[in-house]
Length: 108
Length: 210
Image (cartoon, rainbow over all chains, first blue to last red; front, side, top):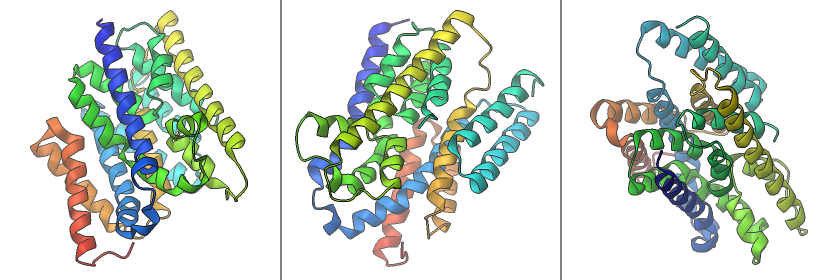
């Protein structure tokens, strides 16, 4: 395990994260005068979330038909729970819990 | 707000699968302090990506923060150490808590500092707890990676509620599928650029009234 590499990645990601947070405070103090940027931001954010969900799915190592079924089931659980109850913790833990049980107990 | 402890624990457990000392998990919570980016870091570290790649991927992943800053700009203190810490700590969760109540015009700095600091302490504790438990008991963590998908899906549903142009979501889905089929190595960068390109073209032609 290369600790220097790990710390380097942490530092790089910490700096990049801070840049995204500080940018509007240092560069866009007159942002309310910039309606196009505001609209891009509002509409792009949910699009990025769709891309991120897909990114997450690609990291799941879905290799069997049963795993596809399990993934679809758990996605549906999260969507239904969150659409109606709007409790982030409940939605995430239930979806992940069912997925973990499916993988570990039922070997899906 | 208490959601940060179990989510932090999920990160800690996943992080521990990489084989580093468990104390590095709370360190990530201290210096990076971004839930989705830390989950992504596990994947990036596992794949052994370059610093440049990690930098770009984090910028892209966290670019949504730019728009959080825009909407709380006027409520943050103009200078001082507290300003910088509040900016550093503007996570998804903190942003949603801050904007859940109207901020008013009086000085909210002590309240904002309290909220932001408490959130980060929960998050760092969660990271430490998950990683140390996994390190000492080495339980089966297969399947925990679904937490990342569930997290993003929840954030997506939160945003859909206030979104008018929902066909753009289909555009994002097509962009993701195409990118995965053609250029999977640069997935985040290419897919999000495609989304941005379509969005700008449509806005310029006046086809969107978001």
